[in-house]
Amino acid sequence: MDRVIKKAQTIKGEIIPPPDKSISHRAIMFASLAKGKSRIRNFLWAKDPISSLNSMKSLSVEIEITESKEIIVNGKGLSSLKEPDNVIDCGNSGTTMRLLSGILSAQPFLSILTGDDSLRYRPMRRIIKPLSLMGANIIARDDNKFPPIVIKGGPLRGINYVMPVASAQVKSAILLAGLYAKEETTVKEPYKSRDHTEKMLKNMGAHIEINDNTIKLIPKKYELNPLDITIPNDFSSACFFIAATCLVPKSELIIKQVNLNETRTGLLDTLKLMGATIEIFNLNEQAGEPVGDIFVKSSSELKGVTVQGDIIPRLIDEFPILCVLATQAEGKTVIKDAKELRAKESDRIKTMTLELKKMGVKIEEFEDGVEIEGPCKLIGTDVHSYKDHRIAMALSIAGLIAEGETKIKDSECVDISFPQFYELLEILQR
Image 1 (cartoon, one colour):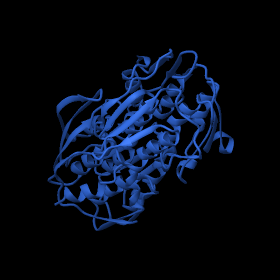
Image 2 (cartoon, rainbow, N blue to C red):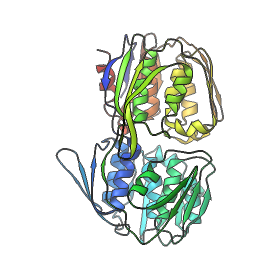
Image 3 (cartoon, helix red, strand yellow):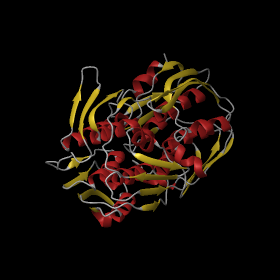
Image 4 (tube, helix red, strand yellow):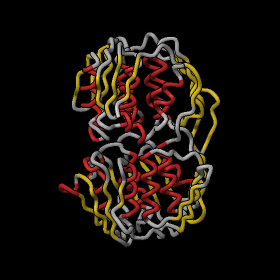
């Protein structure tokens, strides 16, 4: 399905972004491992988290969905999962596949994980290596590079693992496997990635010690406590509307009750350096996460910046929309140390370079990032999402400031994380 985006006159109003995707995945998985009845409210009913929900159902977890869309999980404990009748389909969700691989590595049965065309070319050696060091019997296609993944679960041992790249999914897979290991498991990251797994498992009773970028999980004879959680709203989804408001003249927007976990909010810090007008208010806590309201208004004089190093894991999902913001900043914006982006739903470095060039942007591609010289006058044209939800949404925001019409190919991929994206975009322009 194609979507036509026209130049916007203004963005105004208040919105509530969708529930947090990362926490939705974890909530359904961790509740399935707990002993007792968990309640999950404000779950993200989008394709990726639904893949996690269906995966846990296929492992014989009792999951009930009420009329109000509350999820009740009747968890039977860490060792309660049963061999699935069929191959587990993870859809487009790398989070589902990688985290589930950590869990299934310890189960006394055979399981096979696959996914859609995109997921079957996402790199999996990064989880297979540490899980194999823990004793997992796990293999994948093309010399352990790509799914499907075949896992014959069994006893695991703890490891001390130094991660070559900061990755919340890899870290989480190791820690979940560590719940079942005989010895303690330690993971050290080069930079701190999103920490929802550590926070949630610790709150559920797991013995986790955190020291800067090192996380130690000490196994013991315990069961995880059930969850009672209202999932906060997703900062990564809010970012598209933050950017739209910055870029479209005479715009003001309030975004309500957004998860402001510092491992996720690198784009806010970057925008402030670029000169954007952003305020945070009504700060409080929800599900162990800091949340607050965000006020943003048009920014006519954004400045180019260099983004690299330890901030990259804190804005890894925001690379596409940061590229769009950079097109309107004065001077050069350089993004480095982001090679990880070549292994997302698409090669996001290449795809943003190709598509923004079509719109008239001066952009140069590097192995680990891009350089963009602005401000550029954007020209509406046909652009491709590559069936990548964040590319589709970022190019849609670019279309709001482009002359003429911008047609987004395969725009329905936004359903992976933000099914109401286009509906909300239209409402804010009325």
